[in-house]
Image (cartoon, rainbow, N blue to C red; front, side, top):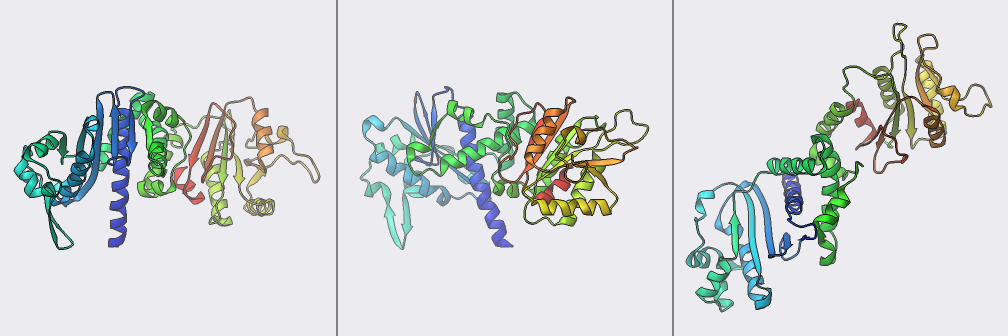
Length: 400
């Protein structure tokens, strides 16, 4: 159990740094200003007035002690000493979150305090006095200290994440759901991709480049992030956004479902029936009756036949566009109106070619919900088409 908590703490630290990097990009004054991830420090900001190298740490369960920040500050000092006079136009920042102990940190950094608390240390049983090893005078140290900012009152993970999502919502002029599940999601994936590049120049990104890269309404989560966020929370947000209307409009709804290897036929039938029950209206009292279209992606033709037979045994009537043995597929057949007389509770589409034909032949309002595991498998643009990434096919039951 402890190992699990340690892993979550480590993951939180990574995402905290990713979020901080995103904030720094969004706060850049000019479109051509850049940040470098894992450059001199965790985040380097290059603007017209110079370079700022930032060390970002998240110790939400740790008490602050001088030793916690001493090593990063020593590394900053070594970097500063190695710089030529022309390259000393740099500022350093240590940005950290700590559970307690904030009062230990002095209001101002003095030379004597830095010598005692940061530059004098023991490593492998050997005592070091870094400022002496680097032959630094008090004036040199004072100059370095004038270029460093230490902030041990950083926001917690949730506060910083909320700030990022709010900022993205304002930039892209959208609601909180779109800001988080499209733009923030894209931002995380892109920053993570940049951070893992081997060459430092490839870890550099401008504000303009960043905003272009994340400007897409395409859900492509890192599955690790879905687990970290919490599957139930994610499914609840999807349900609230898409599948909790007070009054279900009589639209032609398509549920395109990618099937993983874990879901068995019983659970798949249960999911299909749930979609039918929630998104059908066949009562004689209804003026506009309707039932959903369902396409199952990633299963064999043989398995699809088995599923249809199981529905038949449960007295669930379906249409699939084939009117008799040996008939060709007919889009006109499957798009006929379901009602109380024919009692058709769902329309099953057998393959992607048939799906395209059906969508093309429907003139009424269409809503297309595509549930995919890794990448969308249906790319045709529709005005009311929604891509929803899932961790497993079974998750869909918690969404609808």
